[in-house]
Amino acid sequence: MNIATFFLFTFIFYLYGGDTKAIEKALSTTSGFFGCIATLVATYIASQLFNDWRQQHDKQLENQFSLRVMDNFENFKSTYFMNFNPNVSLSEEHIKSNLDDMMNSCEILNNKLRTIEDTYTNYCLLIKKPPTDADLEIIHKMRKSLLDLKKQSNPSSQQKIIQHRVKHDLEEFIIKFGSVINRELLKNLKSL
Figure: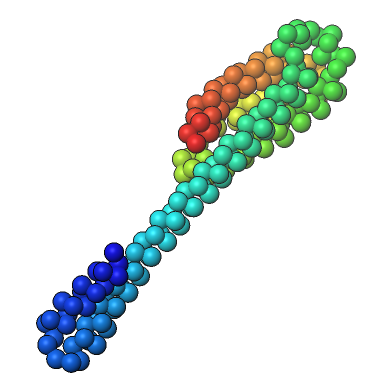
């Protein structure tokens, strides 16, 4: 098809020229014309391939960040369930006998919250959608409870904060941030 078209254009250009050099000019003009078209088509194909690659790469990055946030959240939950089992009542005796371990666990949870906040914020920046104030407030409220606990030096005050505030805030954080993960991250992963 291309060869026939090439000869057709050459013949048409030759008919318009009329002299002996016309065939040479016709061939030159036709090859220049097809060279220009070939260059434009190659450029278009290259741009399409580049855009497809970039979109796939961006989606893979989004998925990696989503999985990182979810892994950090699952890690946080496992630490929480090991130390603050919601099925076990945190009596004063239980807290008193395990206060040092619970304080250490709260410090570990605070560090894990910082990691969750960082990875979630980075994920939101990557998808060019800033984290909502409500999403960040969930994290900040939990970190404030843990930091208030850390500020206390009196064991009885620590016990009260753990028993009445930290345990409640931990459970609330797990429920609310779990819904953020379902709403934002899992939806994004499903859209592969």
